[in-house]
Length: 488
Picture 1 (cartoon, one colour):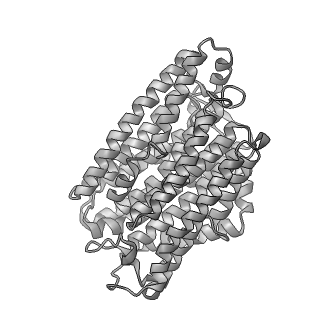
Picture 2: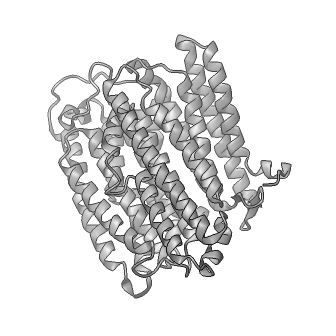
């Protein structure tokens, strides 16, 4: 790889996050007690700066793509839309965290540095066009999240969640590396740009297919697709609520971003996405099972964190529907997945912001029945949660409705109606999901409170609690702005 100083300008969002993250790690040693709120402010400022830089570069780059560092990375509009999304999710997480840290007694200043370092790995994934940069991005992101899940050191459940997540993640990394090695053996290149042509002329097609299947397994772990989902409910439940929000939204979106780059760029077109040995074929089955299992398991949950964990699994399945449609030639699949990731990230952040607001150190209020009467005592929080839940269920006029509609529409564009049955499965499961989302809404509005609420309040948390539902409604009522940005 050749170093080109001019290329650094196109990685400004990444550099902002990395530099701010290193400053935060060093500054943590000099801040104690209440002063540590300054660390959260610096993390928010760095994340917002990275988001603004992504928007500026999005406008500057135009419709052309610029290769960076000898085709290790690429600067294009897709990468900057996703970079802005990841930086925004990081800022929202940093805003939610200080009040939760104070109330649950885990005021670890290093959290914010680790958070921004993890987000920098996501931005690498947004720009990656080489298997090496994909691997570095995934591991940079994942290692940071492993640490954040276990930062409540006095929580046995948190320690267990971190260990399970780390072990499953390490296991997935083995599949990822082995799959990449087999693809390199079949093609002689690590470049995603050159790999498609190399596969077409390869004499080792079987080696390539084996590598692709291993990558399907590895990325299945990262997006918590069934049957590779077993870590998700425990990790989501044991992690602090802001970390769970970050995992369920930004981490999942980053993993799907990597899949779009790898499968769409290197393994798409007419290489081997079709037929019994193509990656689209097993992915379609995994998508159907993931959507169905996630919703059925969520119906049985009384713990809200676990319910949202299984809901997140189901939403990962919907994104796999879009990925399958992309592999089978749908022209709008890529942009529909990007729109879905934006909506889902904002919605999930809003839902967990309400969870953070409602709970406190003495009673985290994770049970559905424990939210009884919230609509009467705290109508604003109940309304915000209702909007987010309706969006997760795909109900109009929220952004979630249009997001699911665009994904299923892209699947219907596939030649000869190959994915029509999958769309039917997705629509039926969307109807099932309304049941468990409305179960919580019913508790908030139609049941009397068992105990008075003592919510967690902070300016940053209230900002997230307000802005996310408003954005969800705006994206549902006026989606044209977002469609123009992502080219839908």
